Image (tube, rainbow, N blue to C red; front, side, top):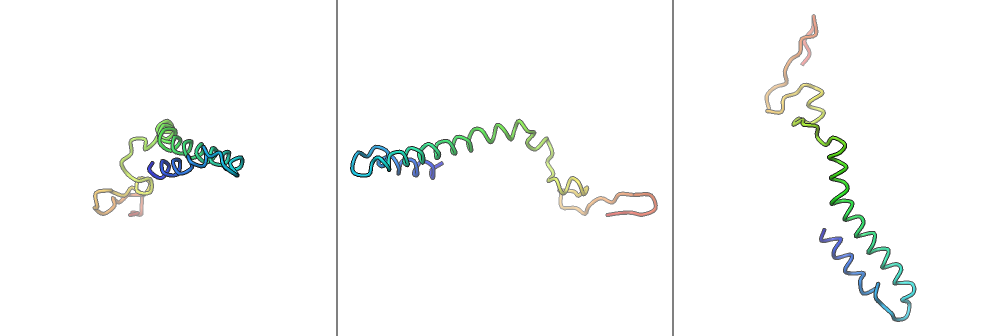
Length: 89
């Protein structure tokens, strides 16, 4: 947030300049300020909403790899599963 704010404020003098070369600097500064504001809003507002709409964590407290392997997240040894005649850890 601070990076975007500083970058946007740094381009304000260029965006309001009227001196020599201002016809090139003003549009460039406007685009940079707009893109910084847009990317900050996307990061702070749109991405969290999109993440929550797509399911987020889906209520699982275990990481996906541990959940698939049947590993315990408590630090204990993984549970053994019986597959008929052989046991797999």
